[in-house]
Length: 336
Image (tube, rainbow, N blue to C red; front, side):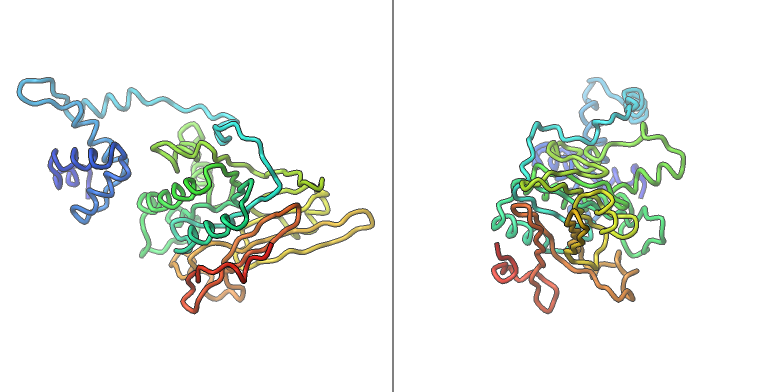
């Protein structure tokens, strides 16, 4: 349904009421309007309607038509100049690597339905001093380079749902380092393929936190860490080739995501050093259509997360019942 036809489904007072009740949050207002008519209304569309209402006056007061407003909006647009600091956190925080919680691939909005509850329980026990996200925080199924399932949401609807999870995760962990990843960066990869320069694309923060927030989040190709015992550690979304060979080459331990069906800590020793590598599964909803491609894979997704406590790696599987839901009991799964 076109913008014009969608607009005719709502009165001015219904739109203004939704915005007022949402206390100015266009995301919440869009949700209210969607529920009111059983339609899918985006946050951007509500913001546009709100601006039109703000500039429209009746009873002899100035009136700005839609075409005039559209022209004004285009004229006000600034071309964003990419900067190396675009993806850095906006908060001044000093990392404490004594107790690091690692969040593996979430693929929002196709994350495990109990992912947030599980992470909250893990955090209450671990009391992490730092949180590192291994990437694929969003899925981008509708924009995939592979065939997408027509029964799933379009790219815009999928993103709106993914943002709900990401913003809830940010409330739980407001300071977070995130690894660049093949799914998380799909919009940039798509743009590159079609010759669209980065000046035309929003930053991660602007995409995921359009109404503000995410000031403590930063995105990195790789995250180097010095552990309390002096060991070097590298975080990255995925490795090219054997992960332990990469650890030996880098002379550092490695933690990575990407491999949903792997959940391990492996060691390798040379005559001069001991290295380890850790892969900690994922936090996806393995029943989601988005992962139907893996139904014949012998290695099924392993749901859990991991941590580095006092320089030692730790795997934390999610305890689940026979329905695949979190049992809410970590005592038997997490021993410190």
